[in-house]
Amino acid sequence: MMKLYYEKGTCALASHIALEEAGAEYSTMRVNFAVQEQRSADYLAINPKARVPSLVTEKGILTETPAMLAFIAQSFPKARLAPLDDPFRFAEVQAFNSYLCSTVHVAHAHRMRGTRWADDPAAIEAMKRKVPDSVSACFDLIESKMLKGPWVMGESYTICDPYLFTIAQWLEGDGVEPARFPKVRGHRDRMSERPAVCKAVAAELG
Image (spheres, rainbow, N blue to C red):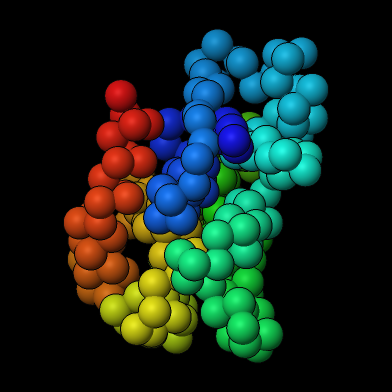
């Protein structure tokens, strides 16, 4: 049985939802950032990056959300969480999730993790001020070019959808008004109605 390490309000929710959608047998373990559990010796033995999520499988430990989502989709093909029989379409799924990981999440992280990139307090504050603009620019692109609707890839629900849903939860905190992005907001609303999403969200909040 797989084990997902997560913290509330993080991108781990995407993999949590995917595990539910796949019908996987799994357990969860919260890593409490408030008491620095991510830096404990026990957790660093699981993920030396001191971040979440981490997914313990029978073959080893995976980190990084795009890799974990692809693994879940490929491990449970009957759930049809990715177009596994079409290399190009599967690459499109990977491209979208890579954009969320490498660009959108990084833009968001400048709000509270500026010390990763600078030591100068003025530079850190400048990064914080830039977040509403940089995150909005990312979502402008998603809204106009990338979200096909009703799901990210069109008519088929994929592992892109829990990932976009998770990151779209951060818009308000990043100083971005979701009403600017009606397609993204509609996607977030549709996701909120899915049983797997409701179960994963409730489990993390509980």
